[in-house]
Image (cartoon, rainbow, N blue to C red; front, side):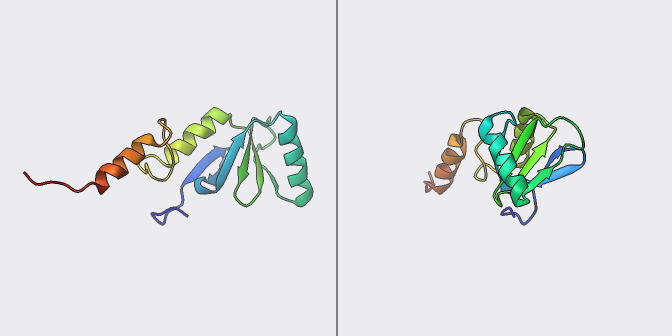
Length: 115
């Protein structure tokens, strides 16, 4: 759960959502390591197919070791993930890799000098 006490949900397509703070990785489905990860998750009962019969275009790994297959492109999911944290610079890095958030936090911590 986020600091604000509200869930930040990412639409992964076909009326399926994932809690943004639980996402560890969003990867492509075609590499051999990801295929092995999907097979292991299926054997352990941790594979979730959210493709609704469509082609798997991305694989989401969660903090609970669940593996979610999605029909949405990686780029789209990444944009939605970043939007889920928009306005919360200390929760997730932005396009600058979090440097802007660090500078903001440093400025806020600096003592102000009255003229």
